Length: 89
Image (cartoon, rainbow, N blue to C red; front, side, top):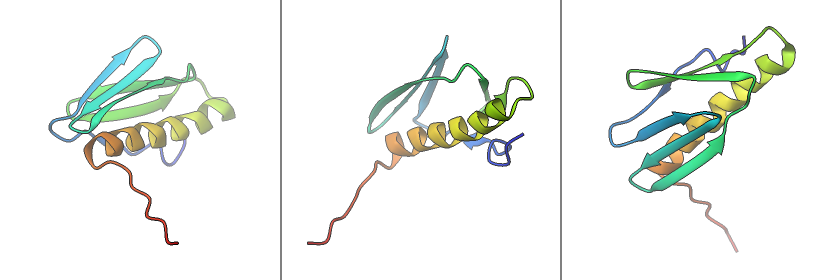
């Protein structure tokens, strides 16, 4: 299992996560983000946390479980805090 995928993703209050067939949708105070889920990764919601688990023992599924965990964590951060890039000219 990926080392990153072992850690659950905390879902703060005010954020709704919808897990549909092959689709992950995160809705929060700053908007909504939707993304297609990888077929090699199972995303489960347990209470106020999300878990990403690899389906199978292949190296690809293992790698994608960590990638999906990072992507979903960034989706949650994007709808709560937002993203900002400061440029220096």
